[in-house]
Image 1 (cartoon, rainbow, N blue to C red):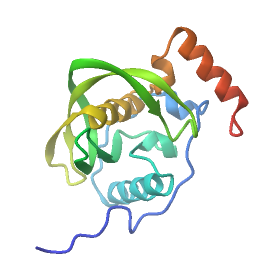
Image 2 (cartoon, helix red, strand yellow):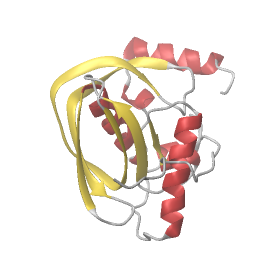
Image 3 (spheres, one colour):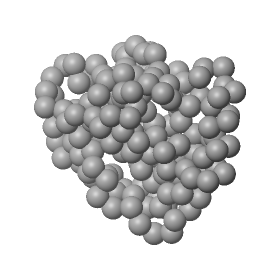
Length: 178
């Protein structure tokens, strides 16, 4: 077994885009260049995600409008899933719809009950352009749906309505970062 470097160990921590930044609400462009810059972006995404203590991070959350995200997220059985997806697309979200607490590194310190399916399948490629399909259940399915949403210009706050939406808007207004 060969030793693989820890994801993000050669990356740099980038500043996070916060709610209100237009890059978070614009659909991301597909990746067409699978060169060293893409490898560097993935490393930076891992480094930034770990520094912020997150479980997933999309490229537009660091101001880059490309369809890339990384994750280091457990499922409901505490199985750890670590990886990245380039040009991902959600091909299935099914099973039971569960409302659970959801947070986001672009809305630091806040969370709201958000409905997501408990199974998700995302297809895309690796940084080398190799096809990959990732299936998640439970909390990991929530993560996959959340990060794919980011790349489509959607933050979880956009999925809220009624009193949950109003409560989150008030919390955002009171936050130190808004």
